[in-house]
Length: 229
Image (tube, rainbow, N blue to C red; front, side, top):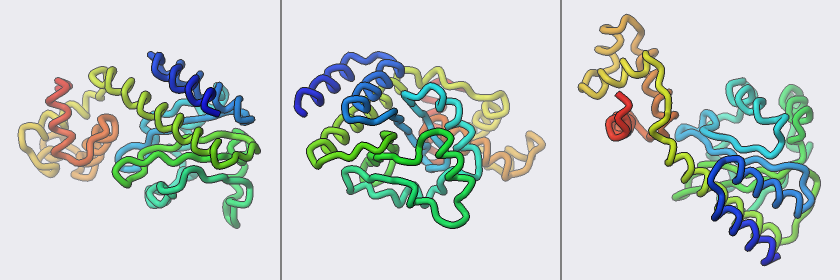
């Protein structure tokens, strides 16, 4: 077991791209008898996936559709994930009455049987690693899976920081954030740009999600720090 962990951690230490991190996850999944693996970083509001790595190339585009649909888990469901547990194993028994559409989608993309590793930071869920297949692990294997999953997630965040300044904002988002940085309220911004206050707030929320910011002030600070307006 130690050899598997050491090899995985060494490979992650040399990983310089998302594809290399994904390859390490795939190797680990295979060693433990899983068919595939994925790693999700949630947005700060837990409403969508900030980033997803998936060893199953046929499933990568599906995640965008999944998180933009009504099938995605509600923020309260994500927040309620058992962050204190090492791993959680899910199978078809998790689909109750009324979950037929969700079950069909999961079945079509081989995410019915999943061993899940919740990733938490300061007591809050920030991501999850999933290993797809019916493999059952002992306690030592679960600990190894958790260690490598957390390390992979840290590398994912590190690689994200390296390309943070390349985050693309739409022209409208730039306008809204420029006015926000000047100290205007959402109502004032809405009046100037001919939109509703709700739409102005939505633009700010979208930018916050892109930057991983926690609130409006943090979003403005990050925009200015990164020179995005």
